[in-house]
Every structure is written in C-alpha cells, then in structure tokens.
Image 1 (cartoon, one colour):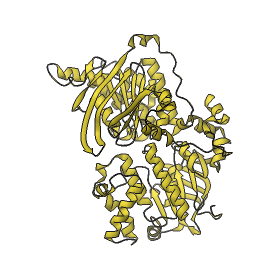
Image 2 (cartoon, one colour):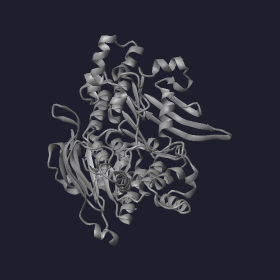
Image 3 (spheres, one colour):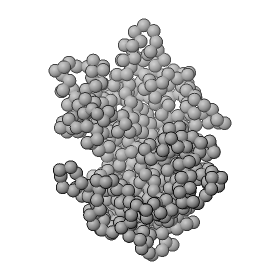
Image 4 (cartoon, helix red, strand yellow):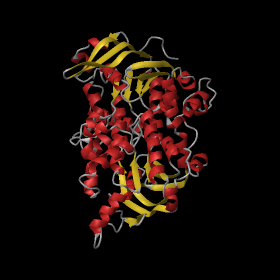
Length: 563
C-alpha cells in the first residue's frame, strides 16, 4: 500500500521555449500530476506532447532556452523550482535518479562503464574504490548485462545501444534514490531485458518505497506496470487516472486512438489484401540465405555474429527477424544489404549472388546494380541523414549516384518520392533538424525507395517512434508494398510490431536461428522454449476488473481500432 502524501507533486506547470525574434512558445501548459512513494506514474503521448520537457523540469535539466513560467514542482516539501546549482547537486543521484532518453550521448566515451556507474557512488561518498567495484558489478548484473566483470572494463562504443541503456539505468539506481525519473528507458531494449529491468524497478519500489516517473511511448508497458497514467497532447494533460481504468475505459477520443494504434494491444497479424496484378509474376523465393556465417567471437554457447543461418523470403512479402540484443539480427541485415561479406554461406537476392557482386570483370557495375536493388533503412534517421543537406539534396543524391533521370527530370522525381511518403512539397527546402523523428523516418524511406529497389531491409526502423507515428509508418509500408510489389526484411526487437507487419518470421538467439515460420503460426504455436519466453515477456496491460483478460479484447479499444 502506497502512502497518501505525494513524493513528487507537479502543479499547474507551465514551460515555454524562447525563440529568436519570436515570442516564447509554450511547450507545457498547466500540467498537474503526482507520484506517490512506491508507485509508478507513466506519462504517455505523441512526440511533441511535452512528456520529456515535463521530466526535464522535474529534474532541473531544462535547456537554457526553456523557462518555467508558472506552477510548482515539489519533492516532498522541497520546492524544486527554487533550488540553486549547489542544492541540485546534492539532490540529483541521491534523492532523484534520472535515466535519459539517448544512451549514445549520455555516457562519457573516454570513461569505462565501471567508472561511469561508480561515479555517483564516489561523488556522494557512498563507497570506497574496492567496494564501489563490487557494487558496480552487482548493479550491471541486476539490469541484465552479461559478463558484468568484463563489461565494467569496456568503453561505451564497445556496447550495443541496448546495453548502454542498461548502464544508464544501473547508474540511476546506484544510490537507491527516493524518486526515479526515466525518459523512455526501455525503448531500445528487447522484451526479455525490458521485463528484467521493469521487474527490478518493481522490486525497488516494493523494497525501498522508490517512486517512478516513467516517460514512455510504449502503452503496453504503461498499462502493465504503472499505477497512474497521465495522457498528454500538445503540452496539456487530456486525461489522467488509474492505469487499469485508462486502458479499459478511456475518456477521450485521443486516448482511444493511442490505444488503437499500439501494436502490442492488437490481437491479430495484419490482414493482407490480395497482391496486385502487377506482382503476379513475382511469385517464388526472392531472397535465399544458405548457411550464413559471420562469427566475430565465441563464448561458451554464444556466438557473436551469426552461425549457419538459413532463411528465405517470398517476393512481395515481409519477413521479420526477431531476437534479443546480440542475437545476430543486425549482422544478418548488413549481410543482406551487402555491407559485409560473410565468412561462409551464400545469399541470393533476385538475380544477384552477393558473394560475387564485388569480384571479377564488371564487378563495379554489378555492385552498383545490387545497391540499387537492395536498400537499407536504419534505426536512427537523425544519424542516417546528413544534417548539412536539405531534404531536396538528400533525395537527389541517390538519383545521381545511380544515374537515374536527367537534369530536367530530377525535380519531378524528387517531388514524387516525397509525395509517396505523404510529406508536403515545402519540406524539400528544410534540413533534418527542422523535422520530427517520424517525418525524418519518412524521408529515410523516401530516399531508400527513390532508386527503385526490389528489397528493403528495415533495421529497427520504427522502434524509436511513438505509437501514432509508428502506426502511420507501418500503414505506409503496407501501402507501398502493395503498390510497388516490394519485398521487405523487417528487423525488430518489438514482437508486437513484427506480428502486425510480417508474413513470416525468423527467431534468432546468440547468433543462431531458433525457428522459422508463418507469423500467426509462430505466435500461436511456438516450437522452442526460447520463442515461448520471448512471447511471455510481451507486456500485457491489466484490465479494469482485474480478471486477467487481455486488454486487446476490450471493446472500447477494438471499436477505436475499427474507426
């Protein structure tokens, strides 16, 4: 039972960003909620709704361009808005832990993982050098990092994005703070590690009374773990209440739409319409992978890379590749896209044998043709698109590289590519930093499609997007596949998304293929213990009546989905 006195109180908070030569723009307008000891309050909403701004205000980390223009934030009886820099140093880490959203820029690249995690212990004088090392290893193990003794001596660039996120979580809970503020802490984690981390937070809440302010776009996680849910839209709270009530009886159309868009709350795979006539001739295997092997290291029964992986993908279909971090998904994707030459095995894509594309007479021309046939869409469009180039330049570049079109036809080809992904023509003169994450991902897809590929490999292409934008992108991919007869390989740690978009699935673990099969068969009748464990780790929101019924059966959610 949680105490009645709030641990964190946010009352009528208003935050505005100052813009050059323009009046201050409100980003958070009249937001109020509370976090009680031992409880979790989840804040959900689309990108730009004000979730992260609210979290940054509560930890005193707003950028210089942001100003709190109204309201109060209290930690117990302490008014956080009145604290100076020295007082904040005494509170951050010891009383308020913080997990930032981006692990790539939040760890010192020149400092080992162990030193980064131990930093809070040293600053607050909670451990000497010897005991700090033992505590660090214990923390790394608790957040699901394998071989913690070795990892403690590695640097951030030697760890995957998911591992770096777990390091940040370990740092945030090192001092067992009264309040943990976590901004999208599990978006980069696979379902089993996500479950492990969330279980750990639940244990800390129960053992220490720690409260959690959980910022997330994953509604299934919010519904399963949170006590209270705050739904934000355009800087305002549109709905708040117990999580079970929000998910069973949403009070607003906006909340209903968020629930309808969430892949984890859908009960079935996508309904595929009949393939267009133009693709009838494409029946048969388009992608064939036989014995793919690219081993970087071996450790016990684990392979770093991939070992003897075989799979096939039919023309005009989508094949999902799922598994935990380090399972070999991305290595397989890079091999398919021709970005690495495997040590053994064969990959055939249409008329191309990737082992021969860069060899012999005419290799340069064959490689160019292969690059045009197979395109890769990365997870992070912010790093995949040149920030110095306009969207027009970004889309024109592949046309020039592949010698497509003429000087006079390039503008119309670029405009057509942008229109295909439902972006307005005036975006062509903008730069990447002027677009949202969802808009940038559409640009990345447009760039991949503009050369007329036959196969597109998506590597975690929607994992960082909120549910509404994610639903839009998945619908867009479905429509483009039907229109253009494209074949997709869709790599993801999000099984709910894969279930929605994929026709067939490969499950990978520790560099090896565990099972293949039609998507619905695999979800209904998994053949291996590993696949069953992945499916069991998918978050399942609690129903209002607590009878264990899956939230996806809720008539309100289903009605919203049908709308």
